[in-house]
Image (cartoon, rainbow, N blue to C red; front, side, top):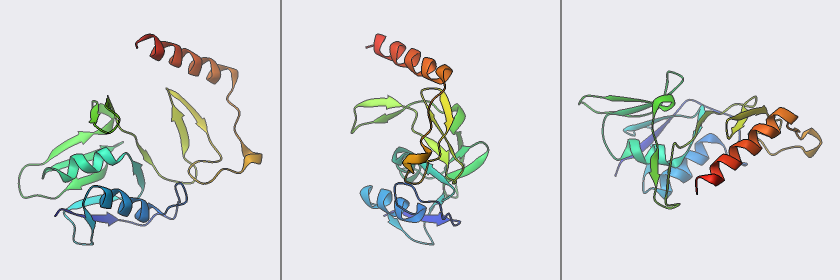
Length: 156
């Protein structure tokens, strides 16, 4: 069984979970265990789609980076492959029957939220939002979101 080793500490909670607990749950769902001596190294400074862990755990060698930082790597003696998130293509999500580039974001209290090509500072991300601090999109952001969804729905 491939084991996963968390690297670093991150006190930022995402959906009420610590970064280490979230990793533990993702690993368990994929039949992996979390141990300090694991072959798959995971930087707890990032939140990522479980598809990335599956990609790295399934074969020795790959390292997935975000903005030049190694986020997941499978230690091996053979040649290594660098997969830059920014240049990666779509991965198959069998559960949802679709292909898309899975998310990978730095996990910090000041993280901005991006959706559909629009980025806004979100006081509620990645912690439980305080409704008094809700973020209203600007008219320009709203127009970008509407245009994105119109385009996406035309393709179907």
